[in-house]
Length: 286
Length: 288
Image (tube, rainbow over all chains, first blue to last red; front, side):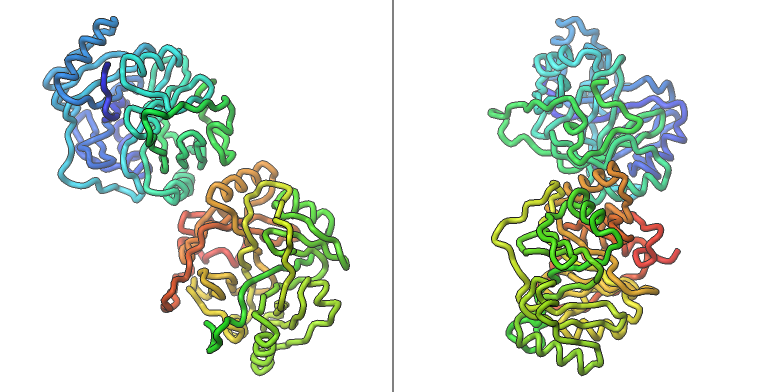
């Protein structure tokens, strides 16, 4: 079984790096780690980077997950190959671009580009944001799925993900104590549905709500609170249509052995217990 | 705060009586929309509960704020102090006490001609509070009062035992118990009650009520927001006759040690840390 330790980074293609940078700095509140000719590295916590924009097609997206060591990586590669997934062994140059020691790439059953990485770089300097959004770190992703039941099996049987809760047939899955690191979202094709950063407090969620409104950033859902994870949240739209989320207060699953996934009905109150309705963002099952 | 007494002179803000133009429509708003429990209809006033007290809001044709006084001796003391300072104070008739659900009272007026009822032994209820809608109200919490003469009005409140916790411009947050404030005085061109605030369980209820009001097409005057000085989260909702009703949560306690009142500038960020603004209530707005 492939042991994912944590989500490590997201790589996004963008035809307009300048707009992506402006948004990341002025709105989202990340820190520029490095500005290459065709790549922009952004920090959100003590890691060297957690988001990388590279010049290109916005449909080119990848998510990196950290695994324990090179042995685990090799084992993961053979597991994936035996299941019929084409595995790309990262070159040294590609590994350098990702600021990791080694990595492999493959596609999940929906076709999402997933990378497994070993020894992603940390930074000696602490994260210092460009605006005080209260970000404490990159935390999870929403991942498109053309068949949530099939993809749940992939993530939970081939990999070590565990279902924490379900809304309809949509699983929220954890790879460590945090309630979810991967949230599957029913969609017609592969893609990253949202990128989550944790913030310090609910004050930060509300402050950002007013701040982003003033900056005319489209708020697509929230401020709200997920009854599943308990997190207070705000979703908004960034460059190339990507949805970003701030949230705080995601529960941790304390008792791994006895936790039973709860079933929530597929309805608005299962996504927000405060009464927020998505605007310009479809709920994951539509 | 106790002015040399072993017990405080005043202990709580215990009710508001509101003057409304459409009694029954306003009463429906209070119970069905805002979430109070309607309990009585007596002497032309409709009474509502929000907590263990028999009633904390009355709708009728007169406006006044009830301040609970420790006992009749304390009532005599505050009466004398206010008279010495030249404020209008009169003893309440039995009918006036009955209308207020209290045992005894002095009916006073501050310098802005806000009616302040100083009351002893307001009625409590043996039954628990059971509202018609789950707005999450825990208790009647505090009031905001408009003042046209804040120097004289400060003298009024200090005389009966209130202390200033903090200032935002000339807005004074007045403390009468362990909480940051129970009365806030807002300099204004006119007098009257600015808002009556009800504490809810948590941020969850502030936000649920915010979405409920939006869906019910009730105007939100300001919020959800957070006062910088008191750390109190608020949602100001437009009630009957332009009166503001508020849901609040999370006010800081004043603490055990006396400290100097802090001065905050009269800016938007002092009034709301999160960035909410009130567009058309001058008392809640900072000059641009």
